Amino acid sequence: MSTDRLSPSQNQRSSAVVEAYLQSLVDQRKLSPHTVSSYSRDLAELLSLSRALAKSAEDNIDFTLLTHAHIRKFAAQLHSHGLNARSIARKLSAWRGFFNWMGEHTALTSNPVEGVKAPKRAKPLPKALGADDAIRLVTSANQHSEQSPTLTACNRAMFELLYSSGLRVSELAGLDVRYTATAGYSSAGWIDSDAAEVTVTGKGNKKRSVPVGQPALRAIADWLILRNALIKHEDTFALFLTERGSRMSPRVIQLRLKAHAQAIDIPTDVHPHVLRHSFASHLLQGSGDLRAVQEMLGHTSIASTQVYTSLDFQRLAQVYDAAHPRAKKVPKE
Image (cartoon, rainbow, N blue to C red; front, side):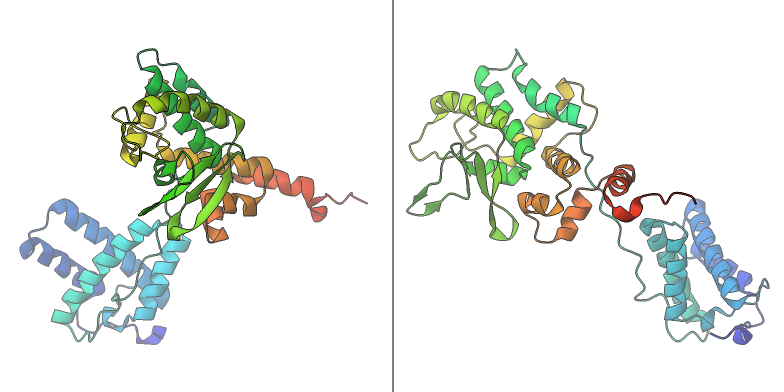
């Protein structure tokens, strides 16, 4: 859109066109004053961006000359100025409605906002526990005197294993005591205490083996002594059982972990994925080996691991300054 073509298509200034649309929201759609005020702010942003494009401070913008490319440029500008994806999506929605109305009252041939999408919203990462809180969470699972020894031992083994090996809650629930293959049944996952590793079937039906630390192995051994008393069927292969003798479900694991965290006053909303994220973050901070963490998490793409195991910039800067040969400060001559 060349700047010399930015003139009103009618004898009506652009702000008046916006006001007419906002009034239609009140009269026809019966929207609340609060909602109309939000539309007004979003359309004021459109007018401001259009004026900047035209390099004009005058109220003489012809909205019918705006194109799909211009709207995409506006969205990119908003993003570059730090506006989040949710707010950009809301503005685009307001602009889309405005241009739909324009199509009914002007020579507008198409809606320039159609097909323009806001940037993808960043997926929020679960907060990793600090190392001290993570250790306190898993080691204090045997300190609830009001719980039965069987329940306490089961919880301790489950929580230790979650943090020790970074398992998904579904992978933990699917574990068997040992690999079993019978008619119509084959283990999806199992523990191998002698090899100090756990094998699980993750996303995409892909198997992986992950090391298990000694504290988790000891907790599992203590649990297995009590587990046998819960077995009510000869074909019960599950490693973790409820007090009724059935396989532990992911939901029960989630509830037990959350209740335990609350009981020991850990303020974070702790669920199994928090322990998986803590495992990955602490392992990466200690080793810096992104590929190894990727393998243990079972990520197909290294990009997933890079997002999942984010480190704070200060630590990355410290690693760079200490390790990179070109990071050394050049002495002044």
